Amino acid sequence: MAKSSPETQLADAALKCLAKTRWDELALADVAKAAKIPLTTLQTLAPSKSALLGLILARLGHDVAARYKRDSGSESARDRIFDVAMTWFDVLAARKQAVRSLYNGLKRDPLALVAARGEILSAAGWLLVLAEADTGPSGTGKSAGLALALARAIPVWLDDGKDLAKTMARLDGDLRRAESMFGFKKKAATDT
Image 1: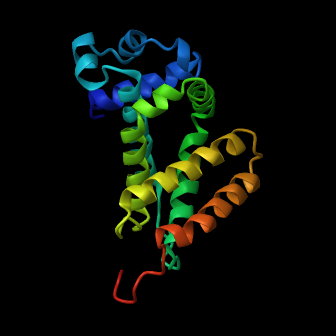
Image 2: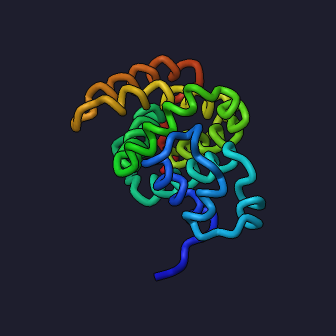
């Protein structure tokens, strides 16, 4: 089995730590120790919690890319974004306790969200790439819209049943409202 990258090791270790430790009590040195990464490598890859959040989001985005299978019948960008977002929630399911800890911690640490805004927008942008919906003049606006829709769906998902009906309803409603704002449209007949 191939050895994973230091970034992946840090992200995986952080998620394992978050399953047992609150975000505000999470120490970067403990994450490095759990990942078996020297502090000098930690300083290069994740010198702050916002950078660590970026590694976690990149790891989740990689897992979504590995799992997402595009429905050939999905013509609208909103439908494809919805499918990618639901795949994202499927990926999160195995890490639900860690996500709960992270979500609750970030609610109490708005400055961490501000510091991680670039990482959050990049993660949402990657989901738009997977959905083939990253075109148009407002790529950053689309990323922000998707990030907001996912952020609003997370607390619903954390308390939702196995069928995820409430999560899907929240996400679908938010994406419908964003549809006209961000210019989501059906792919042209020449697109594949």
